[in-house]
Image 1 (tube, rainbow, N blue to C red):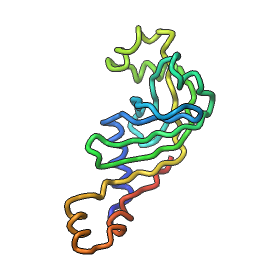
Image 2: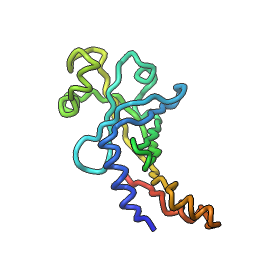
Image 3: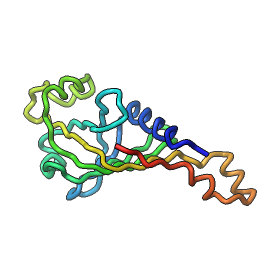
Image 4: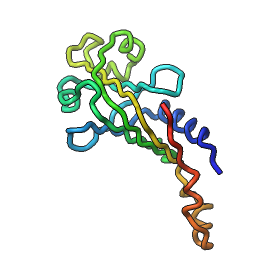
Length: 159
């Protein structure tokens, strides 16, 4: 049986390392890949997402706008669905802390008028470990119930 704390630990480690998630905002068609930054060492929100003021997302966002992040680690060994709200929060201290060469490549400096920083406050999340291993396949071929292998591969994440 997999420990839910182990699943959560793997989720936070993967999110910090991989950083890319699909952001869906209520009122927009489809989701978009975005770079998600976790500020600090704590395993909590908020998450931060740099975007541009002229994107469809920035145009529709209001305070507490419903949103969802869909995350898959690069190795596809952990998946997560994170519900929450997005607010535009151009706090200069946060921008200064999160600024890095990858962010800088998209803007003409920290004072670029098109720079927009989303604050994603998670409220509910589930994370899953990929249970489709070679061993799981062999068990299935031998007649084992696959639901038993999957039932302990999910964790509710508390924020």
